[in-house]
Image (cartoon, rainbow, N blue to C red; front, side, top):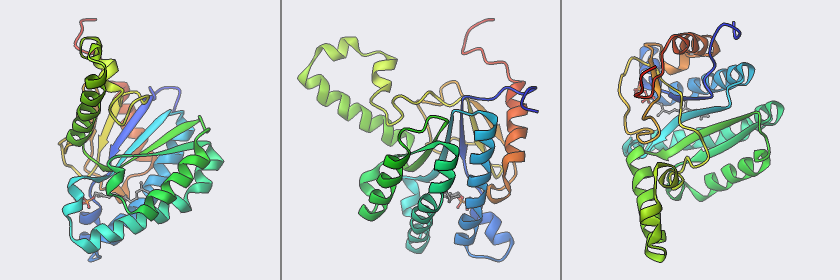
Length: 237
Ligand code: FPP
């Protein structure tokens, strides 16, 4: 199958629908998030198999901090556990883990666990798994603008020299190419303050499948659809 389809270099997923998946089964929302862990594993493995170079996942937004305290705490515990538990998956598959977002809002012990796995996997080059945690697109652009302003105060020539590439290096995604394909599960069709700058020319794929039911097979359907898209980047072919 992989011969016939175009494989995006960077695939990004807005993992949505865990709460609804749980509700449909009379379970607590956290059970939905737990069920979503196996979709993360299945998609990670499929991306490695297909030769995807960057897989990024929107795991927790800046806005998600406003959810009920027990859900936030449960999610953070789940994420910490999952990152530790999957260390073998990362090392076996030569996957580099990177966690990007407003890390200052994370619990110091979670930050330490993340840093440990990031350090352990930093030389792996088969695939980067990027987990966006406490992330929002507007936050990213603002933090980039603040850091740029500080540097420009010290070196005003930066203002004239700044172009899209130079400014892009102030975003937390510096060095990571923009996503070719953004997938959102659960039937919602919006960007929800995700990669606002980086999604400028991304293709979008929306599916009604809820995140806990999404797996490698569903991912291949998205790649098939992506293969039929004609990407012109605003130009004429
Ligand atoms: C959105 O569903 C999902 C989340 C906010 C959390 C995603 C986290 C995981 C799948 C845990 C594992 C992740 C990693 C990276 C190991 P929702 O709660 O908004 O669902 P709803 O719209 O149906 O309420």
